[in-house]
Length: 342
Length: 293
Image (cartoon, rainbow over all chains, first blue to last red):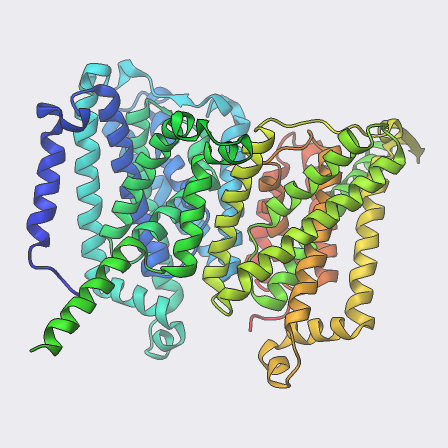
């Protein structure tokens, strides 16, 4: 892959920019509300990256990814509230349980391939959503969502004045997930994933077992997603059944496609943009921008998914590769031109 | 005994609705390899068409109005399916993953359009009074609407089976499900078969949408989502591209869900997913499906 030698410094500068935000206050980052918005955007960027491991790198179209985000959030909340465990132990427990859950679900769904896999994971995800919504034994608090009890977790994570710590934690988690994704996609297993995506038969002819590597991709991305689920629980203060819906997974898919699959930074960028856009588009669309238009047009325009969905369709049809794909294409063009000119 | 009869017939009625949703999905996938996520919005679009008939065009709560609504739902949804196929799907020929992704995008856009136009809340249809009547069968009071669903689904089943068995285009479709590249290589134009499948599949989903709107809690832009998931489960359990398989799986899942919900309150969805997992582990190609090609 083409690497711009300055990219390391650019990433460093962006990180520094966001890390210093709450001190200096640009992008209104000294405001707790904006800190929360950005913390959610970082979480979503990290989630898009975990989804990219499955979809972009391994070629598995899963519609059940959100289930593992929800299991991270819910199991942590239950372990803290009910069992009185410390937050760290509860989070580790939730991540471990998600790991087992992902292994079981992955094992069953990977019996099918390609498009059927998409349907089956959707069904498993929906089952999870239904179980959470039905509130069996009062464990999940049903459709209202399950708040984590504020007096049972470290106090620097509680209260509006402390939102900046959650903001920094979300940023740190994003970096951590990025490093993990980088490491694993550049490892030999990551190479096999990309081989499976491009030509599964060739990988199996080489004597490697496709099923095992697919399961690895499924479990790794699910486990990373559950960590972000814990972070979302802290940022939002509660775990909601919405976390487990296919809508969330579809949003991740959109983010990865818009940002560009299989380039890592594309997925993160797509996720952050998507999260901020779906927050901001709503305000924008209900403002004066569309008020002059007839309701026939302004109605759909006031729904963020209308615009995001249209962009998504256009990218899939006419600009595969999304933002990062376009960047690498133009970069390639530039370099080819430079070489041919000597 | 009376409980048993009631649950059985209710289950078959529910299975009939599942069949209406799933038959199109199964054929579209079987013939073209397209996972059609937009089937859920076909359903909702059809339901809004039917809603317009029962509540605006002919708000007299007559059986005629309901019949016209069902037909209208089918037509709107079938037309919509053909437009999507011509406008988008054919341009992504053989790019199966992209085709599936685009239908996800269509779902988002069309759901947003419907929400913008009609609002997010569910609206109740004006339906004939007899809809809520019950008749006694083996001591059980069975709501009559169940028989309507079974009748419509049976009609769609017979029509699509006769198209498949007795017409030339049906022959092309069956051959295409079996081996699409061979059919194309023989110089047969499969494009018309594609369009037919999309129309019939959309038509069934639209009819299903109107019936679901009357059966469940009204018509809303989001009503398709949960039925789409059940449609997928039915298609996977029944086997891709097989109409009898889809019918069998729809019945099995409808009846299983009703019984599970009755005996273990609220666990129906969970049991159905367990059933799906069992089928996947023992027979990944589905009950009547052929091994993957």
